[in-house]
Amino acid sequence: MMRVWRVRQAGFTIVELLIVVVVIAILAAITIVAYSGVQQHAKNTAIVATADAWEKAVRLSGVNGETPPVAGTCLGKSNDYPAADGFAANECILVDGSNSGVLYSDAAFSGWVLTTRPVGRLPVVTYNLSGTILKGRGIWVFSHDIPSRTIVLAWIAQLDGACARGVPATTPITGSVAGGYCKLTITY
Image (tube, rainbow, N blue to C red; front, side):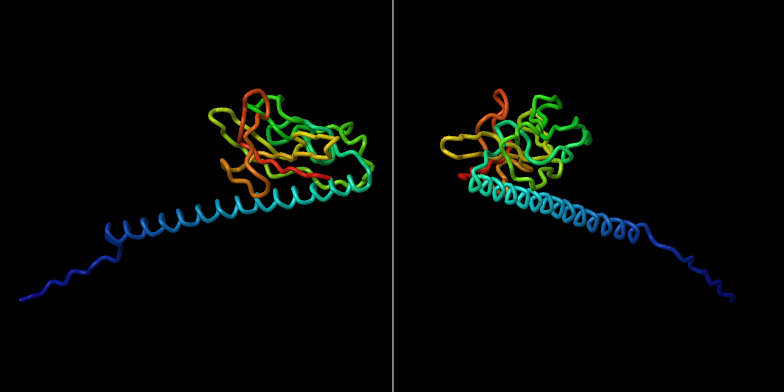
């Protein structure tokens, strides 16, 4: 009697391929979550460093008898805010994509003799506040009380109530838009 040997073809079964695809999908999901966390940490680090630098600059200007920038202006230098990322030149804050946000102005620094100013630009952050889109790329002077020598700096938050520095804000940015940003009060 003659035996017939069948040669088994090399290859993977459907089950083996499915297992490989599932393992790759799990690893991809873990990598994406980890990368997102790294991005947020990098943005928070940039915000903290910039807020710290401006706090020191404001305090130093107060010691030197200078007047810090007026309320409603972006902090930094004119070249910190070029037309890019959906912003027009000199814009650091947009509310619903319009120019009703906050602008940089050299005139706001007229009482500031300090020639070295920290960089004002931050990583671009977009925040959806109950349908109102806040988009920011810098720190601005929210309020300035000259008699009490108090200035409040503000920036758009990355997540609701999550301020890497400062405290979550509850007062309106413009009109009735309250929240979605962080503020830091400085007495100089």
